[in-house]
Length: 218
Image 1 (cartoon, rainbow, N blue to C red):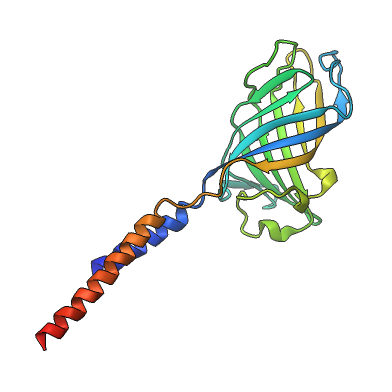
Image 2 (image 1 turned 90 degrees about the horizontal axis):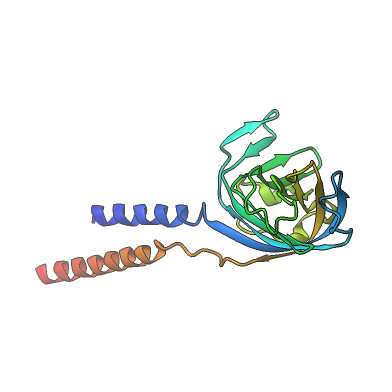
């Protein structure tokens, strides 16, 4: 019986831990609100243009290290991102996720300093990517982990945006306010939950067998 209980406890721990550090992918849509076009690389992009794409990060990550007097926490991983705008497709390499807390708000952000596919060859080669979500409701990040769910209405409309900058031929960049966010990966169900069910079944059978054995011995 002791071994069975140990198996159940271990399985419960694995079930809980497997719910974290899961890849989460979101599709987004954003409206361009600012353009810095010093070299003319962004001449095809206009204010109020639509930007669409995806980003993927690991949810359930605890802080890896902290900076700025313990109010800036760096987490695990941004796995990648994409953006489409003005006939251009661009991708970002892996980066990091972070959580920054101030007196007034909490900001969850994703960063990448690695360019992926340059797209259509029109001079766009964005090496700086950022996705920012800010809120005054600090309760959303009480556990100080990368969130499993991002609901756009929970964040400040004017402080939730995507930023792309650092083009191949200049320091051009633009910012776009996020207007839509849709999760495309299902909420993960721990695979070990089936092991947990099996362990509970074994415990039930063992208890029943023991009762029968005791009854037979009387």
